Length: 103
Image (cartoon, rainbow, N blue to C red):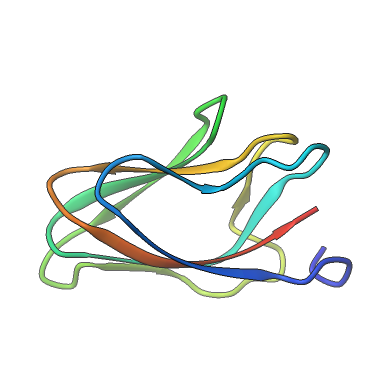
């Protein structure tokens, strides 16, 4: 999948729910790598914009980080025509780096 489309890197910060990547008609968002860090214990969710199908990650202090190393096959993808949202469950700021490809 990576050979047909170039990966995009996104740096972000969120304290609640936010749209990370907008939907593109006929495309999926495939997560190739992810780094999350937080100021406190928190549960972070990544989900399709409309269907709310999600993956949850728990970030525990004192390490306060979660990593998915680069995988050309991807760690998960949205449904076709869906954007990618983040939810933050807890009182914390979550910062991160997302590497993805749309196909």
